[in-house]
Length: 90
View 1: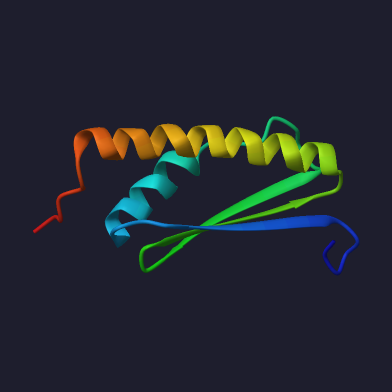
View 2 (view 1 turned 135 degrees about the vertical axis):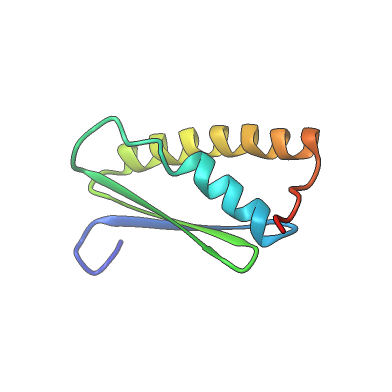
């Protein structure tokens, strides 16, 4: 529980490079939560780490959001692995 009485969860996902972490963030950030209110999700990249933080009013909503995110993260990781590491832009 956070200081406001709600639930929170943080996940830190390491990537081989900053660019791959940024690609994952850009791929996952546009997905809005289906319900307005009750949950928020923040994605940040620091070095090669993707930081994801959720805040929710109910455990069920938090669980569904995390499960959905992990499914999408798995697809992003498979895509990055399939097509190789990102090329640095000149």
